[in-house]
Length: 247
Image 1: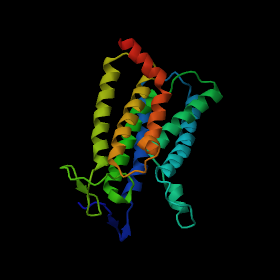
Image 2: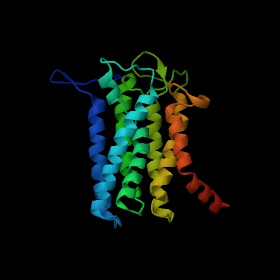
Image 3: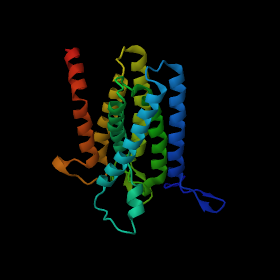
Image 4: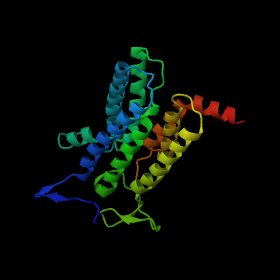
């Protein structure tokens, strides 16, 4: 199979990344519905819907904002306005969704943590989306730097590059299994599973960004890495508490 994978159906070009993106949303939501039926949700249906709405709006704004900051060298013009509006990143979506949820909970007065039910559906959604990123090759800004290592792959431009999407797929499988194990064997407070997920995923993304041809800003960090640092600072109280308990 050649990368980028650009299938033709009845003479029409199929955007495989877009199809897998929509599939990711659909399957992730269905997975969430199944999980919610299996547990006692202490948050009312109306409040849960308000939280989901807050997450969706926050994710929409955050994904576009951080997506633009990821490559600000693209100037705004009539020709590329649609491209800029469609530029998005899961990192901005996750952090924007987090802020949207917290704002929604303050508005409706919901004190319960709400993130644990979303953890595994989010991982599933990201996994499916990353398959689309890999199949899109250099058509998506998720490819890696040039490399002479054994892991190098031609992603469509004749240059051997780090297949960073594949690296992430492997990590997501490991993360899914690890969090499932933690959930079964460790007694966690409500909301802690989501915090562990966010810290783990943002920690991985901080490291993997060094393998991408990014634009680096303050202290040699890209916009995504700066966002990762903000996430860790956001959860600093949780981290310090866990370190305190460990010692």
